[in-house]
Image (cartoon, rainbow, N blue to C red):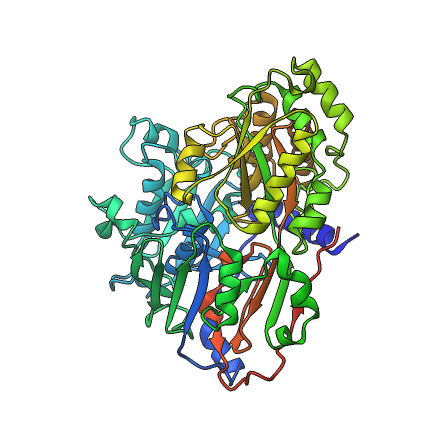
Length: 562
């Protein structure tokens, strides 16, 4: 069994069994412990990191994009957080326990946790934050999880004024009662969207809050200059101890111009950078790069090309299947994408519970693609209008990928026009409105649970189901898997759902990404999990200024395996 397969098993057992576990009380303060354990750790400095586009918002309730999450995770905390091994550990909640049937949850909050404007966090703040999630006019990213709280649906329908199963039993104690067992409930409390917010900073100016956020996290918001930078500063009163860094600056590079950010890193203007695909060989072989720290690790992610199943010709599964057979995604990943990416066959990535190593995807069979197109009424592509393939990422490797799709599809008579959105907020709006025929999108896990992939992407009621896929059998399997606490049965549901989804050819699976970054030699304390870059705890990073330019820093190279 491979390392990733073993990890999948461990994650699955945790997810399925966690509803019965009693979390040990933890009063540790990780940053203070780090300072004691690492005498060389120093306070001070500004960490400059790339952000591929403007976030749509910095309000955790509404965020759906990777850019907003990367920033929000530094400003806000939820009840729980994840450690480097993806175990749930205390955040604002110091202790929790669940009833044997998995329905009643009790959380005890840390005392002395303060919002950035100085007020102490209480259990009523948690009640307010979760209630806000459920009273949105348009369902948010985690509504489908929180609506399983007792009375939530009646509250959302305006039938009752309060949520029965959500109560502050005293200043620091919270009780949540579910209508039915919910396997992903505990990890869902670590979602960015489940962050705790202060009511007085939101009412009645919710929209302003998205550009002037106030949380409890290790860094406080300072300013946001659109398409330029977002600046955060250290929270001196953070409950785990002041972070080492004085500030964090997210430098915004619209369109993810990787060559530009790589050049800025080499000039010393960034503390980290993605290694562009076209620079991989040079970074690996040239001596000049050895002074930097290289960190490589597979992530729970999936880059795919989606079809809008409401628009012709993609309302016909034969056309979608033909497109899958027409493209050699293995060659695209091997020759263009690079960066250690793993070619995808299904939806879930290796290392995630529910991943099926035996799932048969679509092989490269252009003759089969031609046959399916003919059966759909488009022999040799005749009668098929030009297809618009959209992306927001304008990096050279992305353009090379999409050009390869163009060539492969041209071979079966399909004309593809490439289109690029100006920025992420525009792209997101177009996706939500169902205006895009075919689109390139990266899905990154927010929590280590298959539900976080399959339900948001493909359940018919999900706001982020940009393919507009509707299959009652898949809906039922995803709903059953949420309620199922038996590990074996839950995995069986996910395997069956993926087989149906792949057969329906809702998308073209391309690859599962590997984080492949360079860090300046003085950057210390980088902690990377399978959740990737957005969840690197910047509160643990510190600068070792004594490291000279000529020294060689350690390389952490975690190779992906199947």
